[in-house]
Image 1: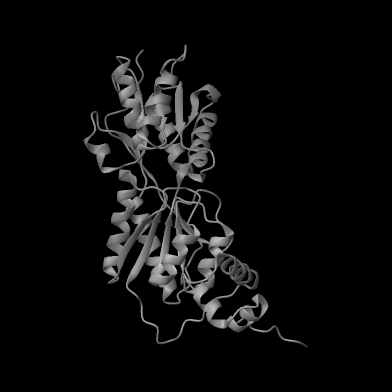
Image 2: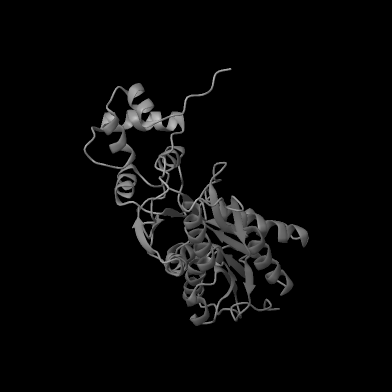
Length: 337
């Protein structure tokens, strides 16, 4: 019976028709390789599932790469705090990269990452293509995805929150106060967390025997302007909602402003619930009722997990969802009679 030949750098070099040093340069992110040659070698690394061997005397670099699609929000700052706390406790430091796109890490970033040498990568709220996964694996770089945009591929380790339960709890709270015209503003349709929050909202209404009105479900971004614009659109409806569940605290702050501009008072004329429980939620006026998403804990867990993977430890679970919690403050009340 034949045994399968172990894939080595020499195997890849022979099949690609290049030298062994050239393959090594591609694996380690060195720049002095022609683009066409680099693409050919990377395709073969992916095809053969090559993984760089890590010698037993390798010592940790003391670095964790934290990769964002965008970072211009308090939400991202909570992720940074959680990652830095966990890294500090482990004697490591955090390097932050911002891609300015939700398409996921690109070739240039991967090359810089490989050249820098890092103990692991935490990728936040981005898509992760099969090609990038293969390149990270080929370089023996452990990675964890926080709040993935789409369904993670089998085997990818990810950390998120119980978004469905959060949407359910927020909507039930408004129902228990007596609201029946409850609107929902969510994020982009292709984000898992957006759809999960809408599904929780729908489940709460259906369980209470309240019909789901498609006109009351809006999609946007998770930013203030989106909450403001969609809030205005909802409040202009002939049968306007008495309560709005926003998919993020920033959206909720935008709804606050839309209500103010229309001469409405929160919560006397309109109840508002957010999602995230950012520090700003407590100091808003009125203080915001919101669903607490454990952002710092999510980032800390992802950082500890990726550092453990770098030490050769297998993660206990491939997909972890931390619990959300409804935090009731002063932005919700019973509807006016």
